[in-house]
Every structure is written in structure tokens, then in C-alpha cells.
Length: 306
Image (tube, rainbow, N blue to C red; front, side):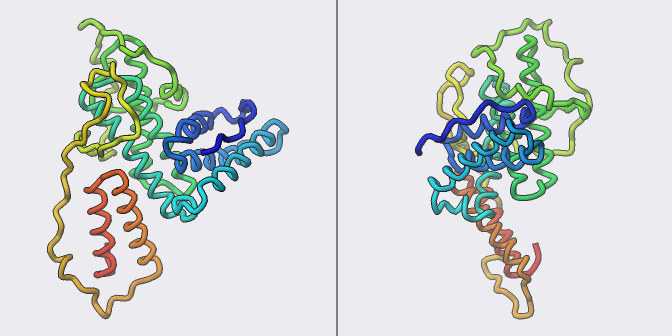
């Protein structure tokens, strides 16, 4: 992919989108679709913040040039030409990155790449808003991922041992003030604290029960982030983990659409969305998600209900 024209310095007013733009740059070669939507989010957000002052107008104009160049390069990519495909692609990518970080967290492998994956997942969930309002589940995933990135970053920075898993969250913790957690360099090998350095009382005590986090062991194979060799794992590549395929309702195999069932245009749109989600999940070898979405589509088409 051809290199994009460089952007002018970021105006101070646009500080809130700097990490989204950095994520875009990081994905220009890894996943241009993700890079495109990160820039689109930055563009839309920047327009709302300030589109009148000269420095902001100049920056947004150059960012628009990047978007147009990317769109031309991506051509007929369905994830760009069809919003429903783009939304599914972005949501699956963000979830995949979240599950990778959650897997590392639950295994007690705390390292820079895991922290960045948590934080990047939260940024990508921000980006999903270009397609409309977030689901409650995505809102909870974003809050949890951003809190986890900040919490683990601060623990390692202070020489403390983070507590693995969804142990709790401070509802009043303003993670926005600590959003450098996903970008600030950390030592490749975090300092090993003594047993007396870790204070269990420093872990937030409020229980965070509002989010349903899949077990880390079910993280899909081929996650977008690479684990550094010094992170305490035996290999640089993440080995595929056994996937639990959901049980398929036998009734779905023999179900024929009833003649008296009238599907609305919204029903067809939802069924199409489930099919697109399934196709996107298969790109990431996530069989479980693909099967679940196909079952939802089939049930909707044959019964008129979800």
C-alpha cells in the first residue's frame, strides 16, 4: 500500500484523538480497513471539537486527504463499501484483541504488549461509534479494557504485582487521564517486586459484575498482537487454543419457514447482519462466534423471532 501524506502537527484541541491516529498508523500495513475507520473516527470527532480555527482546519483537511487516498487504495473492499461488513470487521477485530489481552491477564503474564492490546481494544470500540451507538456490551468491554490497561500499567510502574482477572474496578477512576497506559514505554522485563511490595489493599475493592467476559482460554487463534519473547511465554507465536463450539439445536436442521410468518425489512437486515458477523468471525478462525451468529440468522428467518 502506498505511503500516505504526512499530517501536520496535531493541534492541542485534538489531544483526545491522538491515540486513535496512532492506532491508524500502526495498522496501515497490518489491517488497512482498521486504519481507515480509525482515521474516519478521528475526522468525525475532530470536526465536532473544532473545525473553525486555522490550525484545526488545516489538520482536518490533510486528514481528509488521507481518508480519500485510503478509500481509493482499498477500492472495492466490502468492509469499506458496505457499513454492515465494516462494522462486523471492526467489532470482531476489537474483540479478538480484547480476548488476547484477557487471556494474558488471566494467565498472569503482565507485559507491555498485553497492556497495549487492552488499551487498543478500548480505542477500537470508540471507533465502532462511526456506525452508530454502541451496544451495552461494547460499552462495558471498553470501560473494562481501559481500566485494566491503566491498572496494570500503574502496578508495573510502581513495582507492584497486578492481580489477574476481573477482580474489580473503581467506578470513579478517570482512565482518560491515564490514557498513556497504552503508549508509554515500559521495561521489557518488569521489575520483580519483593513479597512485601504488593499490598492487596491497593486493588480496587468495588466489584465489577456488569461485564460478561469470556474465559481467556477461549481467545481466538492468530491474534493481531505479537507477544514479545521476554514476556514469559515459551514462543513468540500464540498457539491456537481448543475452541468450544456451541451445541447446535437439532430442530434448526428440520425447520422450514412457516407460510404465515411475515418477515419485515428489519428482520432481513438483522439476518444479513448475523451472516456478515459469521463471515467476519471465520476470517479470524473463530468458529464459536460464527456458529452462534448463523444460528441466530436461521432462527430469525424460520420463526420470525430471535
